[in-house]
Figure 1 (tube, rainbow, N blue to C red):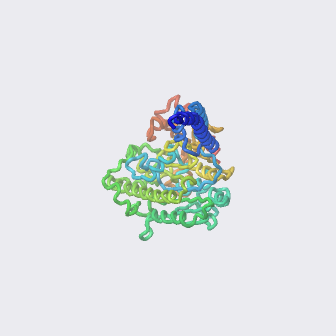
Figure 2: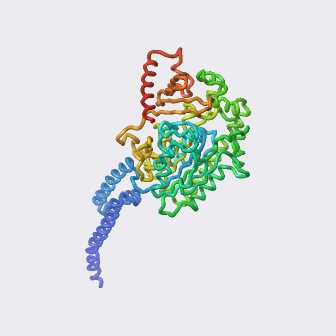
Figure 3: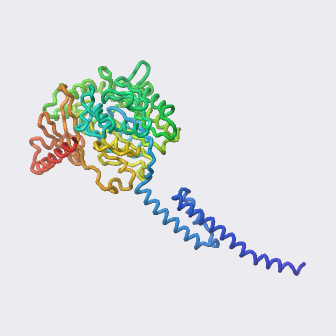
Length: 528
């Protein structure tokens, strides 16, 4: 038996290479199948784990084959990354739609731009989506702006100012955002403030309409908004295979007309801002008021409301703190609604938009409320969170001119619905689904926009105004007075130095002014 041992060892040594080769072949086959599956399924498995796996293949385990497979992984990964950067998510699936739509809320009354304002839910939403820093309304007054939302049109086209029946844009109701969604299989819900004309039962699948107050008995209006929005999501939005569109129309932080205190926050927010002295803007001065055009008098409604709110320091602090408390209350409700979306696993199927109907003077230029063409009045917040958003753009800011008339086309496109020809806005997803924003599309994004406020018929305290807004210059025209203003925004952020006034006009400004007049006239014509 002593002589037989070397023979057995020899046979074992001969078998080892064959066994080792079988193991190598099986190993390589498994790796190949894994990579092939990853390529075919567009890398639904974890690509990083696969790369690390290949990097750790031992040298004696067919390293050349592993190297070739690694090169294949890298090449397909690079191609996939490029596709994701250029168009992250091109699914034709109809997205659910959630519009969180507040009232009288200017662009910088949010925590991500103004640390004095407590809005943690909206701050978080901005990190999960895209923040639009140059978003504006095309008319800054509640019901006209809401008609712009519904129609995707400038006031000049929809002509909705008189709210008695028949309301002009209702003639084309079938072409509105709300009708298009409902007629194409969406379960639609409307909660809170409506305003652009009479409301009919057939306009939405579910409706809870109310506004104009802060408290109804013990019920705060923002709490009512929250309850009805959550009820829709939990009980009314239809079957899981039915898309829904929920419009949460907050009344806050709009003031309560006819009340001396103006703003009545929820009890849950009354403790906020108690230890703060809120900072007012640099144009909240008498000097700024005196620079307003000469036809602005003490009977102007903006000046009347300024006296109601901001003409005395302690009153001004009380007003702005309660205004911010109302904003923080809306933020809390937005947070609850967004939590419900997450709880129901709807985040990956839902387009979420937060914006407001108009801006708001908080004493700037000696004014209160909205209407006119200053930045405080026309610029409003806009956050969009879209599951189709390019992953490299999540949490970023976009400084293109986006407008209130863009909201309807954006929502309709997300729903896979053709945008009616009468709509004048543009689908904003072009700005966040592609790596290079509008550069990857066939036409450039807008470089200017037309603003208009027609006044209120029979109300002499409201002055009609029109404007052409660019990144560099803002041209303002007061048609009833045939009066022009010109501001250079990069060097005059607060619009204090009117370059069109006597004493500041020179040859260069005259040439710029003439060019802007021509562009303004063209923009005004295009708005009809």
